[in-house]
Each structure stands twice: as structure tokens, then as C-alpha cells.
Image (cartoon, rainbow, N blue to C red):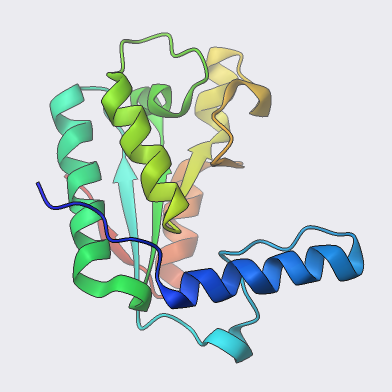
Length: 160
């Protein structure tokens, strides 16, 4: 398996700009949503649907996400929309068995700019709140709607 490359110069500059913004304004600026005039929009945009809790399935999807990062580097923006049973990958205390190596891989991918969107409807069905998620996950109200809206914004859709 190929390792995920070290953070690039662009990612470093994004973090610096976010830090300066935080210091100057006292508000948080997301490094993954930098001033697009300064850094430009990624040429490639993709959203993965992650909807099963099976460890082999999770492994394959996360490997594909890493492969896309290796292939396209800074020129790709990746979102993984996590719905249904796959939500346990993002849980602080998952109610289904999720190998720790997969949770660590997801966290590592997030550190390289991959966004993980957690379906709010799935969370409600489990009685979860945002506090039940790992820090790098972002709650979206409806995962299926997130997939649709990202596609409307030009994101390629990948599911298997």
C-alpha cells in the first residue's frame, strides 16, 4: 500500500493563512475552505457515498480515497458522505465493530483535507449528537441531500 504523501506546500500555506486569520479576527477559519482567490479552486471534485459497516467495504473505499489524493494531490477536493451503518466509522463509541486501523485511516485522510460528512438523520436514529462523533466529522442534516447537492455543485459521485 502506498503511503499518503506529506502535507504539500499549498496545505501548509492554507494552515498559515487560517492561523493568521484566527489571530487577527478571533474567529476560526477552516483551512480546507481558504480564500479561493488566493489558492484557486481544485480542478477535480468528488463525493464518495459510504453506507456500509463491513470492514472490507470500508477498507476499499478509504483506500480509493487515498489513491485519489496520491493521484491528484492538491488539485482535488474530496468529500465522503457517511450514511446508514457506515456512520459507526465516525463514532466516538461505535455500536458496531469498526477496526481501529480504519478509524485511524479516516482521521489521517481528514488531516489531508478530505471532508467526512455524517448524516444527521442516521445519527438521530441512533440517538447520537455531534458530541458522539470524532472531531474531524461534520454533521449534515440529510446525507442523501448532501450527495445530491454536491453533485449539483459539480462533484463526481462515486459509490460501490
